[in-house]
Length: 609
Image (cartoon, rainbow, N blue to C red; front, side):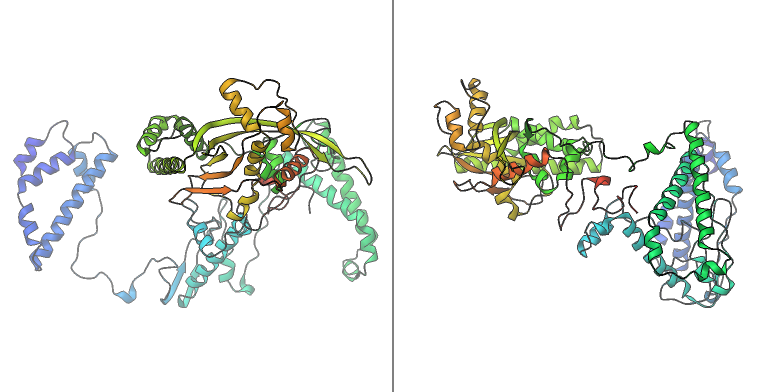
């Protein structure tokens, strides 16, 4: 063994290599391994010896990782300086005299003579950070238990639920003690005891808490406090009449030697002092001290509508639904308040591009090869999450290939992809007063149709491709605003004109002005052929969990169906108005308006109480 060690020793030899040569020269590995198969004292000793050798190798590996280039002599010196407990064949202590280190959950159901609670620090216990945020396990539990409404997802509600769990754990830990209970906390400059410590000490023995932590003195905080003092005092003065009219007991003021006039004098003095302080800050040029710049106090800059009556209202089919169901959401999105483009939208755009370039490909492998060739354009780094997204994209393309095969089986033919369609029409406006004349305004409806198919009977079938995980309820499809707008464009002859322009150029003599009456659309074509009949419209979902073709079809419009034009009129009135209402549906999971929504929690304006 020594000869093997000397032979392996060298300037570049590390402790691991040297240790392996010595162990290999000992030639005891097979013998010890054979002994471990027997349940005897020698077998147990051999088992312990092998464990010790493995621990030595692990120590050498760890030492080499922490000290690259260190010699074997340095490792020997490191091992000799370690203080290791000696092995013993006897138990070091009796069970009834041992100290067990447990968590509150592991101690549940047991009792101890003495319990010591440690770590009762503010922010550590209770720890109010919501659990399971990485994988959303908490949200999964809420969905299963029927608590997935918008109110249950607010941060305040989540923190309250966590606090209740922390209280239960604390009560369980305290109740483990039979005779003595100790609670340990540290009060230092950067640490403060937890509020749970007060629950351990009897009320009569609790020491008074130290004063509130002083807030930092900054210009913004000072301005905010002065403004708050001014607004509260002025609001109190405005409510003075109501306060005087209400019956009141002046005994508390009399006991303190105060009168109503003295209290008003003190309030007035503080108000004047706050106003003077703000005036000094304004002279110093501090931002936010000038009352004219305070949010919520100035009058509205304008109450005029977004568009004048003579302006054209431009409507896209995809915006009709949101303008009707949530006008405020439509307005914030139109004003630029949209979510940043995330990977889901980028992936959806890629699926749309592949569907556009391969509109009739039924071989899923061809579509997947196209996906693999374009995948790097998404800029995703390799990893398990990327592979999960790629697998999801492949499933989308398999559904696309299955739908393309279904189209061929139905005898339909793809005649356009990503077709830009537009039509102008006049919609009626409500009269300004009783007996007023009915006026109209111009509306331009313009959009891009993902896919247009023609049946063997010459009917047009409009498809809108969806790559999201969610879809509208089936009960909403018969009057779905986007699909209805597409069918209206078909009835107005706009799709036929767009198809003709895509193939041969603009139709000679066609006018951009088209009446809302489909028959007038025929006249606008100057004697041209009537619009192609509609087969209906549908949403093709490839991103949902449905395994088969997920197609939500809207039936063709009949002669008496005027609801698409009514929806378009309502959407145009919203888009050209001056006020935008906020609505929450009963099953709404998340509000897209954000901090501007007056219906959401924690979104109060600064002028609200």
